[in-house]
Every structure is written in C-alpha cells, then in structure tokens.
Image (tube, rainbow, N blue to C red):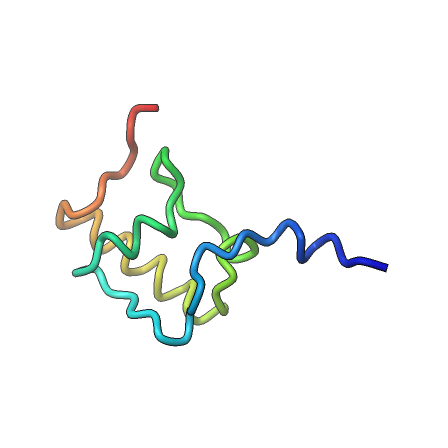
Length: 74
C-alpha cells in the first residue's frame, strides 16, 4: 500500500545537506516562501527540524534588513 503522505511532500529543496541557509542569499530563502511571502512548512519543504528553524530565523532576519518582503500583492 502506498504512503500518501510522501506524495504530498513537495521537495522544495533538492539537496538539503549541501544547502547554505543564510540571510545573505535571498534567492535560496525565496524557495522556502510562498508567492504571498509566508514561510512554507517543514512538511512541504523536506527540511529537517533544525534546518527549518534556521531557515525561519534567516528569513525573518532578511525581512528585517530589507532583502525579502514581508508580504507581496498577489
């Protein structure tokens, strides 16, 4: 029997082990956000819990210094 939970998972990040999550790379952080600017949950990104916490912190940091928008008009 197939596990449908795995089908729902949208691997946003292909190779998460070599991924550099830093506020200085907004292109990488944009892949972890929706078009409206909200952060994609861990169940859809495929990141580990530690990587997701780091990504959330770096996205918020990039928003504060103006590298990423808080929201966008859709």
